[in-house]
Length: 476
RNA sequence: GCCCCCAUCGACCAGCGGCCUAGGUCGCCACCCUUUCAAGGUGGAAACACGGGUUCGAAUCCCGUUGGGGGCACCA
Figure 1: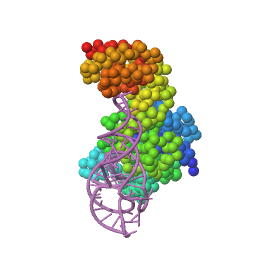
Figure 2 (figure 1 turned 180 degrees about the vertical axis):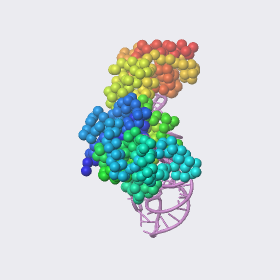
Figure 3 (figure 1 turned 120 degrees about the vertical axis):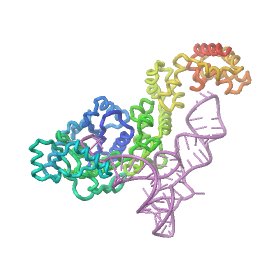
Figure 4 (figure 1 turned 45 degrees about the vertical axis):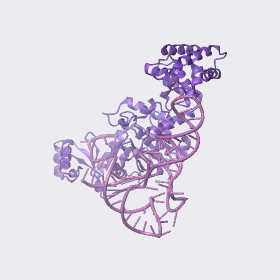
C-alpha cells in the first residue's frame, strides 16, 4: 500500500508554528518512506476563510520547503484539493448513512440544544446530546415532517469501543458511550468537519493521519464514520502541541506565532525547519541537521507524546549557526532586502566585502541593519554615547594622532590602518581597549559593530577623517 | 463535571531492565582568545515529580497520587 499523508490547513489567518510543525512531520515522514505528501485546504468555514490567508499559507509552506506532491496549483488525481469543492461528495456520504440507518434525522433546533446543554452544565451533568430523536416514534416523526421542521443528520454511535494503535501515543481506547450521537450534516445539507475529513481522507487514499493531539478525542468519531462508510481506517499519529514557556499552547503573547512572523524577524527557512523538526523529536547528539539528514533519520514513532516548549533562544542560536555556514554571496543576497527596507542602499561590492565580517556576528538577518549602517550611511553620535566613550582625557590626543597618521597611508587597506592605530596606541602607552574603543565610537557612532580595522577600511579614508574630525569637535 | 493524553537538568533531545557516578545541545556562570560585539576554546552548576509494587537489579515495566495539557458545537 502506498503511503499518503496530508497537511490540511484551515487558512483563516497566518499559519501557526505548531500546525506547521505538524505539517513538517507529515512531510518528513512522506519523504522518509517515499510516500506522497498532499496539501488539502480546509476552507469550509466561510466565515473565517480568506483568500489572502490562503495565498499566504501557500507562500509560507513553500518558503519553509514543504513542497506538496498533490494539492492546490499542483493538481493530482485525487482532487479537488479544496474542501469547499468537495461538498457534494460529503453530502452523498451523509445521505448514504441516513439511508442505511447509520444516521438519523434530528429535529432539535440549535436553540433547544444550546438550552439543554446549559441546563446540563448547570446541573453538573454531561453536556452531550441525549439521543432523543433516535427514539422518535413514527407518529412524532411524521408530525415534525408535516410541520416542515428542519432536520440535521445525526450519526448513530454504535455500542462498543473505539480503539486504535496510535503511532505516537500507543494504544488508545474509548468507550463509545462517551461519544454521543453527533451531527454530521447541517439542516442546510452541508457536512460538518468529521464527515468532511473522513470522506476526504478516504477519497484521497490517505494512509497516515499525523495531526495535533487536540484531535485525539475526535478520532473515535472518525474511526466510526470510516467503518460506517466501509473505508479503510488510516493509521493515526497524534503529535502534541507546541507550548510557550508557561506550558500553554504557543500563542501571540509568547512572541512570534506564525512562520511569516519568524521570517519577518530574520530567521532563515533552513534554520526554522531544522529547529521545528527537533521539537518533540530528536536524535542522540546531532542538532544541526540538513534536510536530507532529517529525512533519513526521521521516524514518527519516535516523536514524543509529551509536549515541547519552543525556546526562541535556541532557535536564534541555530539561526546564527546557519548564517555562519552561508557563502559571502548568499549572505549578501539575504541581507540586501533588509538594508533596502531600512533605507540603506548598499553597494554590492562593498556588501560582499562586509559579508564575511557580518556572518560571524549576526544571529538574525535583521541585525545586519545595525552592523551595516555605519558603513553605508552617515552616523550620529548621541550625547550619551559621547559622554560615555569620548570623555576620557586621552581621547583628543588619540583622535589627533590617528587623524594625522591616516592621510600618509599609501594604500587604504586593513593592515595599514591597523599599523597607524596601533602606532598611536603604543606611543601613548594605552592599553588596546582604552585606545580602540573611543576610536571605534568616533568612526562608527556605536560601541558595538564590525571589527574596527576592517570597518575603517570599508568606510574609506575621506569619511573616516571626517568622522574623526567631527568626534574631535565633540571632545573639546 | 466527564473522557483522553502526558511527566529526565530552566528549555530541547539521548536513555527502551544491568554499559547511569544519568549523556549531548541551547541558555546560564567562570576562565582563555581578543580591537568592540560576536564567534571559537576550556571548565562548571543544573534533572529521572511523589508513593507503592514487579525484579537479583528500574529513569526504564505495573498501580496509585500529584501536577500539566487537550477534548466534550448544526467550528475546523
